[in-house]
Length: 312
Image (cartoon, rainbow, N blue to C red; front, side, top):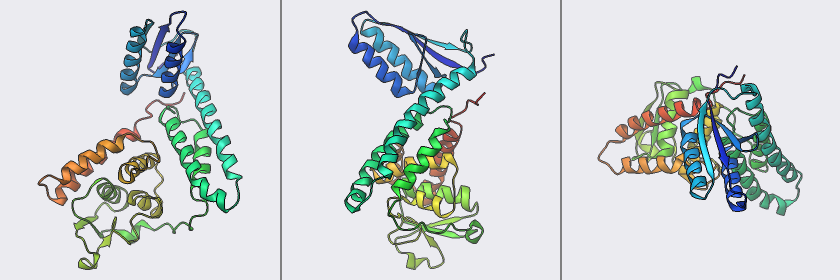
Protein backbone atom coordinates (compact mmCIF):
# COMPACT_ATOMS: atom_id res chain seq x y z
CA UNK A 1 0.00 0.00 0.00
CA UNK A 2 1.21 3.51 -0.83
CA UNK A 3 1.84 5.68 2.24
CA UNK A 4 4.12 8.41 0.92
CA UNK A 5 2.76 11.59 -0.67
CA UNK A 6 3.80 12.19 -4.25
CA UNK A 7 3.57 14.91 -6.88
CA UNK A 8 2.48 13.75 -10.31
CA UNK A 9 2.94 16.13 -13.24
CA UNK A 10 0.89 14.93 -16.20
CA UNK A 11 1.65 16.66 -19.48
CA UNK A 12 0.72 16.62 -23.14
CA UNK A 13 2.77 18.49 -25.73
CA UNK A 14 1.91 19.56 -29.30
CA UNK A 15 3.16 17.26 -32.07
CA UNK A 16 5.73 19.75 -33.32
CA UNK A 17 7.22 20.88 -30.04
CA UNK A 18 10.87 19.87 -30.05
CA UNK A 19 12.02 22.95 -28.15
CA UNK A 20 9.27 22.64 -25.54
CA UNK A 21 9.94 18.93 -25.11
CA UNK A 22 13.66 19.59 -24.56
CA UNK A 23 12.90 22.43 -22.13
CA UNK A 24 10.54 20.23 -20.11
CA UNK A 25 13.03 17.34 -20.02
CA UNK A 26 15.85 19.58 -18.82
CA UNK A 27 13.77 21.18 -16.09
CA UNK A 28 12.46 17.87 -14.77
CA UNK A 29 15.98 16.42 -14.76
CA UNK A 30 17.27 19.44 -12.85
CA UNK A 31 14.53 18.93 -10.24
CA UNK A 32 15.38 15.22 -9.92
CA UNK A 33 12.04 13.94 -11.24
CA UNK A 34 11.64 10.45 -12.68
CA UNK A 35 9.42 9.57 -15.62
CA UNK A 36 6.26 7.57 -15.13
CA UNK A 37 4.58 6.03 -18.17
CA UNK A 38 5.02 8.20 -21.26
CA UNK A 39 3.61 11.56 -20.22
CA UNK A 40 4.04 11.97 -16.49
CA UNK A 41 6.80 12.73 -14.00
CA UNK A 42 6.96 11.97 -10.28
CA UNK A 43 8.55 13.81 -7.36
CA UNK A 44 8.16 13.59 -3.57
CA UNK A 45 5.47 15.94 -2.31
CA UNK A 46 7.50 18.73 -0.70
CA UNK A 47 6.66 22.44 -0.55
CA UNK A 48 9.69 23.62 -2.53
CA UNK A 49 8.99 21.07 -5.27
CA UNK A 50 5.31 21.98 -5.45
CA UNK A 51 6.24 25.58 -6.26
CA UNK A 52 8.75 24.51 -8.90
CA UNK A 53 6.31 22.17 -10.61
CA UNK A 54 3.53 24.76 -10.53
CA UNK A 55 5.84 27.18 -12.33
CA UNK A 56 6.83 24.49 -14.84
CA UNK A 57 3.22 23.53 -15.55
CA UNK A 58 2.40 27.18 -16.17
CA UNK A 59 5.31 27.51 -18.61
CA UNK A 60 4.19 24.40 -20.50
CA UNK A 61 0.64 25.75 -20.85
CA UNK A 62 1.91 29.15 -21.96
CA UNK A 63 3.84 27.46 -24.77
CA UNK A 64 0.87 25.54 -26.14
CA UNK A 65 1.04 22.33 -24.11
CA UNK A 66 -1.15 20.92 -21.37
CA UNK A 67 0.04 20.20 -17.83
CA UNK A 68 -1.72 19.18 -14.63
CA UNK A 69 -0.12 18.87 -11.20
CA UNK A 70 -1.71 16.31 -8.87
CA UNK A 71 -1.03 15.49 -5.21
CA UNK A 72 -1.46 11.75 -4.71
CA UNK A 73 -0.94 9.09 -2.07
CA UNK A 74 -1.65 6.16 -4.34
CA UNK A 75 -0.61 5.59 -7.94
CA UNK A 76 -2.44 2.59 -9.30
CA UNK A 77 -0.15 -0.23 -10.42
CA UNK A 78 3.02 0.84 -8.62
CA UNK A 79 4.10 0.77 -4.98
CA UNK A 80 6.13 3.25 -2.96
CA UNK A 81 9.04 0.81 -2.98
CA UNK A 82 8.98 0.65 -6.77
CA UNK A 83 8.83 4.44 -7.07
CA UNK A 84 11.74 4.87 -4.66
CA UNK A 85 13.67 2.30 -6.70
CA UNK A 86 13.17 4.45 -9.79
CA UNK A 87 14.69 7.40 -7.94
CA UNK A 88 17.58 5.27 -6.68
CA UNK A 89 18.33 4.02 -10.18
CA UNK A 90 18.25 7.53 -11.64
CA UNK A 91 20.61 8.92 -9.00
CA UNK A 92 22.89 5.87 -9.25
CA UNK A 93 23.30 6.60 -12.97
CA UNK A 94 24.11 10.24 -12.21
CA UNK A 95 26.67 9.24 -9.59
CA UNK A 96 28.22 6.64 -11.91
CA UNK A 97 28.98 9.35 -14.48
CA UNK A 98 30.75 11.43 -11.84
CA UNK A 99 32.54 8.37 -10.47
CA UNK A 100 33.90 7.46 -13.90
CA UNK A 101 35.29 10.97 -14.36
CA UNK A 102 36.74 10.96 -10.85
CA UNK A 103 38.52 7.65 -11.45
CA UNK A 104 40.04 9.04 -14.62
CA UNK A 105 41.31 12.01 -12.61
CA UNK A 106 42.55 9.68 -9.89
CA UNK A 107 44.75 7.84 -12.40
CA UNK A 108 46.50 11.06 -13.49
CA UNK A 109 50.14 11.49 -12.52
CA UNK A 110 52.85 14.12 -12.81
CA UNK A 111 53.49 17.61 -11.43
CA UNK A 112 51.71 19.52 -14.19
CA UNK A 113 48.74 17.18 -14.01
CA UNK A 114 48.57 17.70 -10.25
CA UNK A 115 48.36 21.45 -10.78
CA UNK A 116 45.46 21.09 -13.19
CA UNK A 117 43.72 18.44 -11.09
CA UNK A 118 42.30 20.92 -8.59
CA UNK A 119 40.11 22.66 -11.15
CA UNK A 120 38.78 19.38 -12.52
CA UNK A 121 37.97 18.09 -9.04
CA UNK A 122 36.09 21.28 -8.18
CA UNK A 123 33.94 20.80 -11.29
CA UNK A 124 33.20 17.22 -10.24
CA UNK A 125 32.37 18.37 -6.70
CA UNK A 126 29.92 20.91 -8.13
CA UNK A 127 28.29 18.18 -10.21
CA UNK A 128 28.12 15.91 -7.17
CA UNK A 129 26.49 18.60 -5.04
CA UNK A 130 23.88 19.25 -7.74
CA UNK A 131 22.94 15.56 -7.78
CA UNK A 132 23.03 15.37 -3.98
CA UNK A 133 20.44 18.14 -3.80
CA UNK A 134 17.92 15.96 -5.66
CA UNK A 135 18.95 12.65 -4.08
CA UNK A 136 15.72 12.48 -2.11
CA UNK A 137 16.22 8.92 -0.82
CA UNK A 138 19.96 8.81 -0.08
CA UNK A 139 21.23 6.62 -2.89
CA UNK A 140 24.05 4.42 -1.48
CA UNK A 141 26.31 5.29 -4.43
CA UNK A 142 26.71 8.83 -3.07
CA UNK A 143 29.03 7.76 -0.26
CA UNK A 144 31.56 6.17 -2.63
CA UNK A 145 31.64 9.21 -4.90
CA UNK A 146 31.98 11.60 -1.96
CA UNK A 147 34.91 9.64 -0.50
CA UNK A 148 36.77 9.54 -3.81
CA UNK A 149 36.25 13.26 -4.44
CA UNK A 150 37.47 14.06 -0.94
CA UNK A 151 40.60 11.97 -1.54
CA UNK A 152 41.25 13.76 -4.83
CA UNK A 153 40.66 17.17 -3.29
CA UNK A 154 43.26 16.55 -0.61
CA UNK A 155 45.82 14.75 -2.76
CA UNK A 156 49.18 16.36 -2.32
CA UNK A 157 48.05 18.50 0.60
CA UNK A 158 49.69 18.44 4.01
CA UNK A 159 48.67 15.62 6.38
CA UNK A 160 45.43 16.20 8.24
CA UNK A 161 45.89 17.46 11.80
CA UNK A 162 44.99 14.94 14.53
CA UNK A 163 41.43 14.88 15.85
CA UNK A 164 41.08 16.65 19.19
CA UNK A 165 39.26 15.34 22.26
CA UNK A 166 36.22 17.39 23.22
CA UNK A 167 36.71 16.90 26.95
CA UNK A 168 39.98 18.85 26.72
CA UNK A 169 38.04 21.89 25.50
CA UNK A 170 35.17 22.13 27.95
CA UNK A 171 34.10 25.36 29.67
CA UNK A 172 36.58 27.40 27.67
CA UNK A 173 36.38 30.99 26.47
CA UNK A 174 36.63 31.52 22.72
CA UNK A 175 37.77 34.76 21.09
CA UNK A 176 36.91 36.10 17.66
CA UNK A 177 36.79 39.44 15.86
CA UNK A 178 33.96 41.91 16.53
CA UNK A 179 30.88 42.25 14.30
CA UNK A 180 30.74 38.52 13.54
CA UNK A 181 29.29 37.32 10.25
CA UNK A 182 28.46 33.90 8.78
CA UNK A 183 31.60 31.87 9.49
CA UNK A 184 32.27 33.35 12.93
CA UNK A 185 28.67 33.01 14.11
CA UNK A 186 28.30 29.57 12.56
CA UNK A 187 31.53 28.42 14.19
CA UNK A 188 30.39 29.72 17.60
CA UNK A 189 27.10 27.86 17.14
CA UNK A 190 29.02 24.68 16.25
CA UNK A 191 31.21 25.06 19.35
CA UNK A 192 28.24 25.65 21.68
CA UNK A 193 25.97 22.97 20.22
CA UNK A 194 28.44 20.18 19.39
CA UNK A 195 31.71 20.74 21.26
CA UNK A 196 31.11 22.56 24.56
CA UNK A 197 27.58 23.52 25.69
CA UNK A 198 29.08 25.86 28.31
CA UNK A 199 31.48 27.67 25.98
CA UNK A 200 31.72 31.46 26.41
CA UNK A 201 32.63 33.98 23.73
CA UNK A 202 34.49 37.31 23.77
CA UNK A 203 35.33 39.69 20.97
CA UNK A 204 38.54 41.51 20.21
CA UNK A 205 41.13 42.21 17.54
CA UNK A 206 44.25 40.90 19.31
CA UNK A 207 44.55 37.45 20.95
CA UNK A 208 47.23 38.89 23.24
CA UNK A 209 44.50 40.87 25.01
CA UNK A 210 42.81 37.60 26.01
CA UNK A 211 45.66 35.19 26.83
CA UNK A 212 43.35 32.56 28.35
CA UNK A 213 40.92 32.50 25.42
CA UNK A 214 40.99 30.23 22.38
CA UNK A 215 41.09 32.42 19.27
CA UNK A 216 39.13 31.32 16.21
CA UNK A 217 38.57 32.71 12.71
CA UNK A 218 41.53 35.05 13.09
CA UNK A 219 44.72 35.24 11.06
CA UNK A 220 47.39 32.72 11.97
CA UNK A 221 45.45 30.82 14.65
CA UNK A 222 44.88 27.08 14.95
CA UNK A 223 41.11 27.29 14.58
CA UNK A 224 40.85 29.41 11.47
CA UNK A 225 40.96 29.01 7.72
CA UNK A 226 43.19 26.06 6.90
CA UNK A 227 44.02 25.39 3.27
CA UNK A 228 40.75 25.68 1.34
CA UNK A 229 38.60 25.27 4.45
CA UNK A 230 36.66 27.96 6.25
CA UNK A 231 36.77 28.00 10.07
CA UNK A 232 33.55 26.00 10.42
CA UNK A 233 35.07 23.24 8.27
CA UNK A 234 38.32 23.36 10.25
CA UNK A 235 36.46 22.91 13.54
CA UNK A 236 34.48 19.99 12.15
CA UNK A 237 37.64 18.21 11.07
CA UNK A 238 39.63 18.97 14.23
CA UNK A 239 36.87 17.67 16.49
CA UNK A 240 35.81 14.76 14.30
CA UNK A 241 32.26 16.00 13.66
CA UNK A 242 30.79 13.94 10.83
CA UNK A 243 27.02 14.43 10.98
CA UNK A 244 25.67 14.71 7.44
CA UNK A 245 23.53 17.75 8.25
CA UNK A 246 26.60 19.55 9.64
CA UNK A 247 28.51 18.80 6.46
CA UNK A 248 25.72 20.40 4.46
CA UNK A 249 25.76 23.48 6.69
CA UNK A 250 29.55 23.57 6.32
CA UNK A 251 29.08 23.65 2.55
CA UNK A 252 26.65 26.56 2.85
CA UNK A 253 29.00 28.53 5.11
CA UNK A 254 31.97 27.79 2.87
CA UNK A 255 30.20 29.13 -0.22
CA UNK A 256 28.97 32.21 1.67
CA UNK A 257 32.27 33.00 3.38
CA UNK A 258 34.75 32.21 0.59
CA UNK A 259 32.53 32.96 -2.39
CA UNK A 260 34.18 30.30 -4.56
CA UNK A 261 30.98 28.40 -5.36
CA UNK A 262 32.71 25.11 -4.55
CA UNK A 263 29.60 23.35 -3.26
CA UNK A 264 27.00 25.07 -5.40
CA UNK A 265 24.71 25.84 -2.48
CA UNK A 266 22.09 28.58 -2.72
CA UNK A 267 21.34 29.34 0.94
CA UNK A 268 24.67 31.05 1.63
CA UNK A 269 23.85 34.24 -0.26
CA UNK A 270 20.81 34.84 1.92
CA UNK A 271 22.70 34.10 5.12
CA UNK A 272 25.49 36.43 4.10
CA UNK A 273 23.06 39.28 3.45
CA UNK A 274 21.33 38.75 6.80
CA UNK A 275 24.54 38.60 8.86
CA UNK A 276 26.04 41.59 7.11
CA UNK A 277 22.86 43.49 7.82
CA UNK A 278 23.02 42.52 11.49
CA UNK A 279 26.67 43.62 11.64
CA UNK A 280 25.60 47.08 10.48
CA UNK A 281 22.84 47.44 13.06
CA UNK A 282 23.20 48.84 16.52
CA UNK A 283 23.42 45.45 18.17
CA UNK A 284 26.14 44.18 20.46
CA UNK A 285 28.34 41.31 19.29
CA UNK A 286 26.68 39.07 21.88
CA UNK A 287 23.23 39.94 20.52
CA UNK A 288 24.35 39.08 16.98
CA UNK A 289 25.66 35.77 18.25
CA UNK A 290 22.42 34.97 20.09
CA UNK A 291 20.24 35.74 17.07
CA UNK A 292 22.66 33.84 14.87
CA UNK A 293 22.31 30.77 17.09
CA UNK A 294 18.54 30.84 16.53
CA UNK A 295 19.18 31.12 12.79
CA UNK A 296 21.52 28.13 12.72
CA UNK A 297 19.25 26.09 15.00
CA UNK A 298 16.48 26.53 12.45
CA UNK A 299 18.78 25.80 9.52
CA UNK A 300 20.09 22.65 11.19
CA UNK A 301 16.56 21.44 11.90
CA UNK A 302 15.53 22.05 8.29
CA UNK A 303 18.61 20.30 6.86
CA UNK A 304 18.40 17.39 9.30
CA UNK A 305 14.76 16.73 8.44
CA UNK A 306 15.06 17.46 4.70
CA UNK A 307 14.98 13.78 3.75
CA UNK A 308 11.85 13.14 5.75
CA UNK A 309 10.58 10.15 3.77
CA UNK A 310 11.69 6.82 5.13
CA UNK A 311 12.76 4.10 2.76
CA UNK A 312 10.31 1.23 2.52
